Amino acid sequence: MLRLREYCERVRDDAYGGSIELVEDGITAMENELGAAGEENVSREIEYFVDQILEVTSPILPLINLLDRCMRFAERYEDSEVSAEELRERFVTLLEEIREGQRQCVKKIGKAGARMIASGDKVATFSTSGSVMEILRCAADVGKRLKAAAFEARPNAEGYRTLDEISALGIPVEFGCDALLCKLVPGSAVFFIGADAVSSTGEVYAKTGSYLAALACREFGIPFYVAADTSKFDAMSLLGFPIKDSFRPAEEVTGRKVPEISRIVNISFELVPAKLVSGIITEKGVIPPQAVSLMMEPEKMSRKMTGKLERWMESSEKLG
Image (cartoon, rainbow, N blue to C red):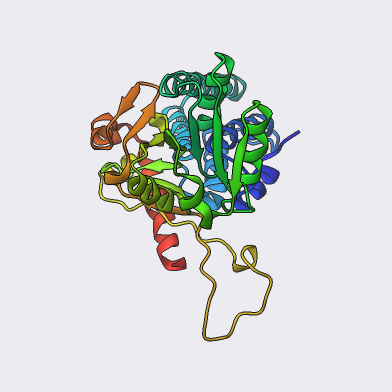
């Protein structure tokens, strides 16, 4: 049974291949943890969950939005006379609504993306994304014959998981290290990536290497699409806050001794400029990057969560 401590360890180690399973496991861990510590104040219990997860997470917006929904619930019932048992039942209902909502969003993105692919196309992708896999799965399910290109990607060479999952769909994959982007991308009809966050100006926060992929697509005239539901739209960026960086240990890159005057840079995510993005495939349709800000509602964010995110981003700046 997945508990909060184990979940936080996985998040800290960047052990998840995409935001879909990250949110799913977050929901499961909180459900399993509810009431375990004997806390009678359910709002305080939920805020504890939020603080523990926020401390270890990268700027992965679906997870941040999950935590915001949790804090809004906690604030709503902070001084409620409803029993702890009833509040926990209501909280589980909320979590399951979020879980089902995410699943429905992914299905819609899969169908929309699959319509953009013709049988015989070569499709390129980078890193690991549940939304991109759903697009390819939907295309395969209706009998479209495809080829694919994929790359190692970091952290933990997670692109090999993508290789296995695409191959399991019966789609042959040309696979190489990230330096082979300009070798394997040409001939592709479209390039799909997932995203962990999208800023109000349409910049896409994705795994390191995605920027190079976008540049390669521009060079070879290949449409570069981002598969991201609207839960990945960063409302804090609309308020002027930058997206937090994700620094990883140098040991993930190399075990060799580094000269004292030098250092290993290991960052999991980077920003892809909006000008390189052909469109964003959402559950509400395919939109241009410039339309992202029109779909944000920062005023709905939890007051406490906004403060927590401010401190969370400040801690990242100190690490940098």
